[in-house]
Length: 168
Image 1 (cartoon, one colour):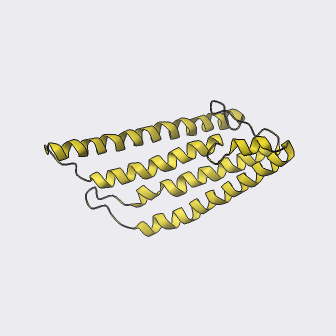
Image 2 (cartoon, helix red, strand yellow; image 1 turned 30 degrees about the horizontal axis):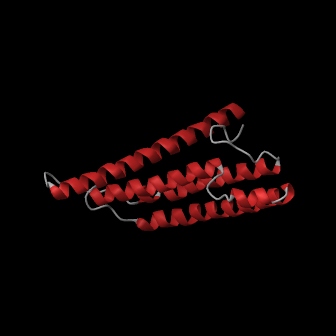
Image 3 (cartoon, helix red, strand yellow; image 1 turned 90 degrees about the horizontal axis):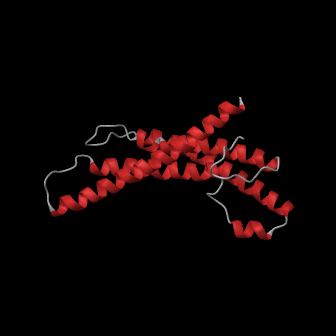
């Protein structure tokens, strides 16, 4: 069971990082193409704004999830290092509880936001819900990782390096 969870965790880590990089490259290429096409208008990119918006939303959420998974998104190491171990542990628990609450807000309000989008993009004719699905989807995974971090802190295994598995 642990081996399957470790494999799933590594899969999430790799997927987040690769997909976020691909989204960033897509945004970079499209923005670069837009600059070149303003100078030399050889053709137009249909749905340019829609694609940029889609890539940007997913890039931000996947990058946040990757950092959340590694436990480095909301961290002030200098402050933590000044505290004695007992207070440091209490601070980590409070931070992870706050992060868990924020993740739940992302899930619940993200679902509501996704359902309220209810529009179809003008050029690509796609439901905008696919754009905003990144919010509750990544929020749900963030909530799971927050619970795992709470468990790890409670067991005294709060330290994690990005090359290791979260569940191992």
